[in-house]
Length: 386
Image 1 (cartoon, rainbow, N blue to C red):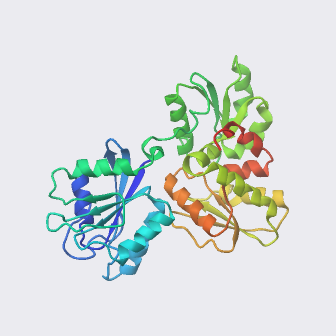
Image 2: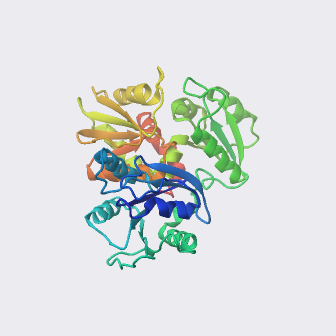
Image 3: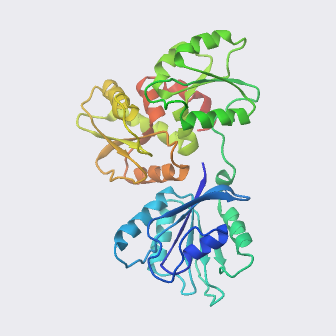
């Protein structure tokens, strides 16, 4: 849920020094030796008035040291994870490295701030761009100037965190959360999307009733008035939809996160490609994090089984996990996870890349409800939001 801000630039333009100065912490090692920053350095902190942020300090774009190509490759992959970029140059101005970086940022629609550093030595005007900050680490007002420039740069939906479910119901409404305790449930706790949804509803002054799917029917009977909304884990969608009356709104945690972390309308349209799948078509199950797969894993067992049952086709279903984005050429459909372990920008970047390659993309909750024939009901509560 944090704002991810990447620092980019050539070696020795002062990226790490600038980041250390802004955060008032020694986050990155500083040296005149080229290639000092190797792997990406991440630091999470509160940056008021922006809020919680994660800064990512990257290797120099023109690094020509040993293993440089691997470092630069990591630097460029980070672009898919960031919400905003700080492109640092010095009094030498822009070169082809910065221009190529800016082109990539524009392609992915990522806002960026150009920080012209070392202006205490010489101030060189960079022309043809907006959002430029002229500064140096010796500037006493550098922190104020950076925050002010960053806030102006960011869209409102980055500064003001969107609701997960609290905007879908009125305050004092009753909401039932259906949380199965199965093999995928971590011992002694519930998973992140469920925790975040619960907190969001509590912050919205809702009355939250949490049950397993086996106790849902009794929970409905116990309530004097019907709940305004039932939210279920996608794996229990079919059973829950049979229990919850049609006049009660129903959706899933994964669909809520499709809206929060990605583009709900894009994912709904992407699910329609399921009907067009043919024998031999390749489908990519794309996950944001790596985890130990269990015997009944949702991405490796349950969704593939649903797809084959829905289509009646002999599909080639492949899985990919982690922050890297694979080569998607040749795939007929991408099904993304709920993205609870990554940020919105990474999902939006993946949607843009999928659109560029003309590959439909959807997510777990949308795909599951589509295969079960309950998608219209599952997204009905979002009808004014899409």
